[in-house]
Length: 170
Image (cartoon, rainbow, N blue to C red; front, side, top):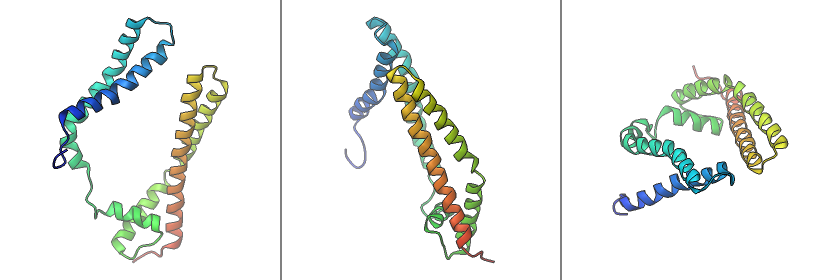
């Protein structure tokens, strides 16, 4: 690596590992010993096609999209999120942005319930599944949906704390 540039060979090897290994494991998992080698190779190819298309699109569009998607470090949204975490702010402009963000978060309370319902449905599958692979996937999804619900609940708690504690600026 020289001046922040990565060698093309490293990108190819990393891409082959990042795209090929999950495709191979998915093909072997789906085959479950029922297909011959050529059937597994065909399944790996079909599994890898969306990943290859997505990676190609990301590489081609990434240089153009990423700089446009970044927000500046001093953006009001970032300052508002920091104010919500801290629970207070002295700047009236940041306070107004933090109040808007807090109101937005409070308006999305339904998302916590949605995630918990999905986690409960996956927990039912976790208990009732017979294949180990189905149990593994259901367990990962239970953890993921529960984590998403907790993350949103934490944001709602920060918003309530901010709105209750911070005096409103004129």
